Image 1 (tube, rainbow, N blue to C red):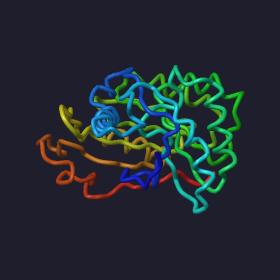
Image 2 (cartoon, helix red, strand yellow):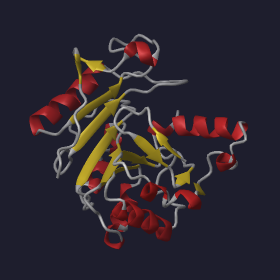
Image 3 (tube, rainbow, N blue to C red):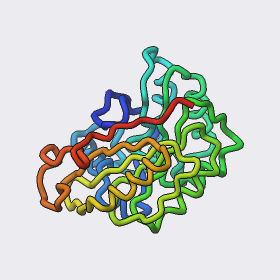
Image 4 (cartoon, one colour):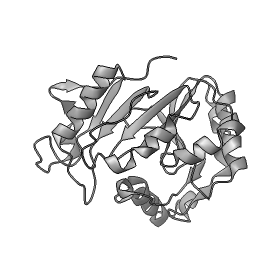
Length: 244
């Protein structure tokens, strides 16, 4: 339930919950869902419920056992603010993150409104980053909700980027990740969509991280994710949030 991660913008994962529910187009080809059903077929006991939301009670305090500081992606296989996660369980996870101050925790959610609702019940210690996913301009409202959450670091995961976002709000945002889709049934991402977001980040002095092209190259040719790489205009964009 915790392991080193191949995800470019983190170092480890911690999954106090597993399973989720699809809520928007970015969820259509969910990698976590594919992996959950693969693990279920392998009879991995934690995934006996497949991709149904499941609380993994015995791993809640696991980060406290890791002495070496890590950047930790919280719930790579779920969403901590899923509607079926009890408030009390979320508060317990926050207390662990507060106590494990040697680590940085990246909490990514498609439900920033629930994070906002619970803001007064948890401690937003400086090692807890909160992000939300924005795949098209239709979901920019998630950013506006995130802007009102008192996390010290607020970030956007614009992945998979499925359409142009003309005016991505960046006030109070401290980091932006952009990436294309990979895996079966992947949808292409156009280079001008990425450039527009990158240029806004550069102009606003917001760190920009380009994660991957995914299944389609910058000129729209379908190739392997590895072949396409993650260069944008001849450069690797791997910026991280400024210390706050």
